[in-house]
Length: 391
Image (cartoon, rainbow, N blue to C red; front, top):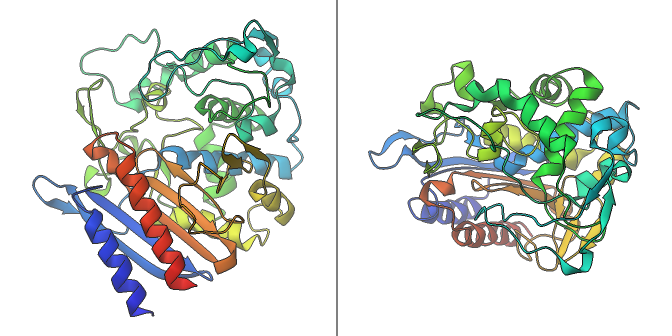
């Protein structure tokens, strides 16, 4: 064990506690072996109660998308569907001509000006493919309000108590999807595409998204911490990292999904909703590093992690993010062959094949608010240092 590495990385993590995040868990795998695995901070930082542990489950936010993409690709692997099949071949109501319209900012929830290049255009939704959903080039808006029309009592229910409303809210999305550009003319990171992908999984398998994910991914990798709606299954809040005080819910979000749209979808969605511990998040990264066929064929794993899109400063695989010229969460720390993903709550998973390295960083940085800069700076510093120390 390299004690210099341990000390330097431990010092960086300690500096983040109470400043960038109240709690965190970091796992570094090197050549398939645990190289670093420690937890930091408190789940209740005001009272210094419930110290974080390596088993603490964090709201994974958009790391959920990687699990969803992997589950979908198992269906490709089995011949149930093809990447370039139209989405409407599985979800017929998604098809039809749709006007290009204005979108909404996913963070401020304010309308965005429509792109004048596409004013007056129509999109043939029947031609949108699963590959385009996975690469965020489908033309779909980044975000819409999935809670529209919700009659929410005071207090607002927990997500799993809203689960019966999930089908009708998804039906509204599928029947009237919001397009803001013609497919493949832009890259716009879209939660909507992964909501739709989750519906496709359910249609193809006749199983719920949690049930198919459990069968096709979680059980096969021995993951026992990854779960939707942990409170519904009796998990104690003392084992879960809380996130921010939510003005909409008028409470500290603790054990329920932070993402509002995922909450209104009953806590179960393809874009957000999963909770988990660092070891299981890292296990998914290790599976993609090893590409040994235990989860997917090596050919499909290569397809998921190769560059599919290079546009507007971003590079994308299928579900996975690659380091881009502008959009690059780990800075210049890792090579162009590396791949990973981040989550809004302060989570990330990054894989560097050249160093045989997997880094799973889970935090609840939104406990202190939604300013993205502190966690962005911290993530770059951490990954840069890990890479330099292991060269």
